[in-house]
Image (tube, rainbow, N blue to C red; front, side):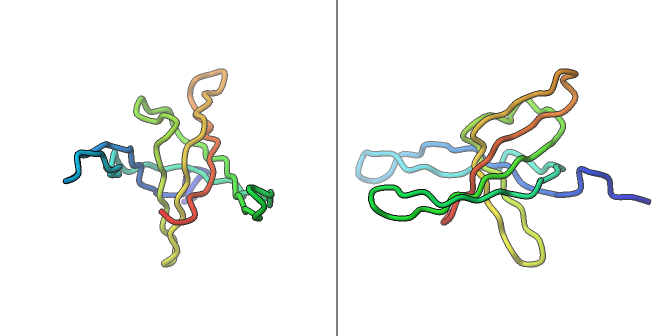
Length: 110
């Protein structure tokens, strides 16, 4: 039996604003659900931002379409004790509308 291409089990979170004691709002990440997907090898680049070097890792994640997958949500994967968090930048369906390609960037300190 083969695992198939959608072999990575992850959790999706969406941001939700909650009121704090000072009258402002804090962002709390609420779990949307578990999903199966395929993470292709991420690419990385280093770019100067405000006279500092900033490392950015980008990944392409493929999954079946879901109505709750939107830009701004986070995907969290755990494998062998290592946690990877990705921020969805864009959700692009293919022509047949049977697969969804997510363009994501890494979240260094979630």
